[in-house]
Every structure is written in structure tokens, then in C-alpha cells.
Image (cartoon, rainbow, N blue to C red; front, side):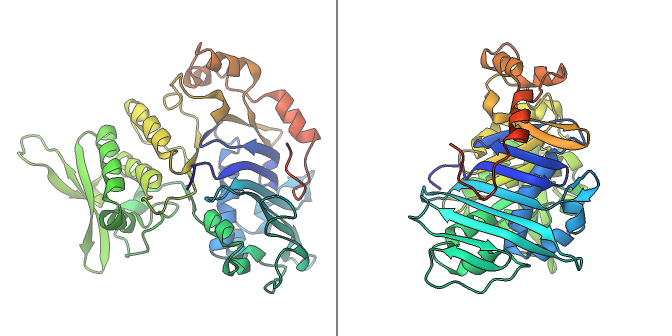
Length: 401
């Protein structure tokens, strides 16, 4: 990629607990809030886009409990949900992709609107679809579309829109599960780590073959976070595979070898986070890496190394994390623009930039973000929340200046 920022802006409407949000993203973005505030729902909306494009919209919705569990209910009435993403493609062209999903009377659902534009309006590739009908397009021929699928899947075979499809399906989102990572795994495609780490052995094996420099970064940070661990590799166990760790043992001249099933949750989660961050190579890197609470199960002393790894990884992949860890945020060099506060008010999630007091404290290095979090002073700007609520843009309109 020419730069690590892929998504420049995310607009969500009626997605789970989020009534409306309009968030400009940085190369490294921290979503900070209490448990249950709705941080995960922001990441899940982006994850749904990837799942709906790489698989199917039906599966993406069903994996989340169906449309009724995804769309937000307002005053007891079901609503439609919509997502708008603004982005920069690897070739430097700006674009946007948006869609809205609504229920049908028979209990099904339909893609009510879908739109994609690359470059300046009227000058680059574009299309607009309403309820399965193509209303406008730059293309001389257009594949058949149906109301229960995103058209961009069919358009992945059209050269003009393939870069958008590739970039959106190259996003990875993670809530790593040490129990799954500990088990023997079937050999799988190892180009992109799966959400809970269910193919981590294949990913490590892939890096051993095609990107040893990326694996070296993972091993370097793993030893910093877990000093007793000296390395990790993929090994074959019959038709299955797993990970083998080298670890210091008291009185032993050389490190002992342990399989993943014998490693702690903290070690496995640390490996999963680092693998998610550095899984790319010179020819390929995830466009976005989103990680749920990467500090979970790690000793607070490892926070500085984790923070450095997040920053380093953000130079080749855009990174979005959720956190409520003062230790992870305890660095006065973190830019206030990179932190968004997430709060739940009356059951509705709001995502907004920090208020003026917190921004000034961070700008002048009076406090770190972690210190403000301990003082419960990382709050969203109420004026920004009000602006979002009163000036909700049309998901399918022009980008706001």
C-alpha cells in the first residue's frame, strides 16, 4: 500500500447499539470505553462488511443471530441499518462504499440501497442500486444483481471494482481465544489470520515460508512480552498441526520445547495479537487489523512493548483496537486525535472524539491518556455527539468536506 490508512471515515446507522456515529479513523485508532459501552459493535460492523463480501450476506447476518439481532430497535420499533465507508485504495484513489439493509414483510431482508464510487463523481467507476435495480453505473455491462446479496461480490470480477473488493476483504478482526489456539488445528490457508486464531499454526507456517522477516518481528516482541519464550514454529502432528514454543527452564542448558497445549493463556494471546499485527509481507498486508482488548491476560509490564508493536504495525496496516486499559494508554506521546471515547447513554452507543479538557491535557502532556482513564476523564465531546445526532448525513450522499 502507498500508505497505511485505508479507511478514512466510518458512518454507521442503527447497527446493534449504535444509533448513529461518524468517525474519522487514523492509522492507529484507540476506541476507549467501559465494558458494555458498545466498542465491540463498532468493530463488528466493519467485520460484517468483510464477512458479507468474502462469504455471503446471509451467513454474515446469521452468524450474528439474524437481522433482528443486528439492526437497532428504536422505541421498540425495528429499524433498517446502514454502513458507509470512505477509503483510500492502494493506488491512492479515494472512494466510498455504502449499503443499507431492511426487513421484508415475509421475514426476510433486502439490500435496499448499495453504492460505490471511486475517484471524483462522474469521472471514475461507480454504481448505485436500489432494491435490486441498477439506477446508475459507469460500466457498459453490469452483472445480474439480487436483493439478498451485495452487488460488490458479483462486481469483484469487474476490473474497475476489484480493488475495492480486495481491500475490503483484506480486513481482519480479532477476539483471540487461547483455548482454540491451544488445540490441534487442521491445515488451512495461512495468508490471513482468522478471527479467534483458529488457523494460527497455518499462518505461522506461511510466514516461515514467505515472510521470515515478519516472523522475526513476532518472535522479537513475543520474547519482550514473555521473556522466557525464545521462539515459536509450526509443526505437523499426523494430519493436524500445532505450534511448538522454545522456553527457558531453570537448570537446563538449552531451551525446552513445549506444544501450544502446554502454554498459558497470556502467552497464546500475546502470540495471537502479534501475529495479527505482523502477518503481512512485502507483497501483502491486511488493509485493516482490528483487535478486541489486545492487553487481555498480559502482565501490565508488557504494555509498553505491546504499544510499540501497535505503532510499528500501523505503518503497514491500519490498526483499530478497543481497550479500557490505563496501562496500555499510559504514554504521553499518544495523539489525542487517535483516541475516541465510547459511551452508552440510555442504551444507545455514542462514539466521538475526546472533549476539550481531555484533548488539552493530552496536547500539553499534562497527563497521559492512561492517567486520564484512571481518573475517569476520557469522555466524549458532548458537542460532537450533538452534532452527529442533529446533522446525520445521507449514507448515500456526497462526502462532507
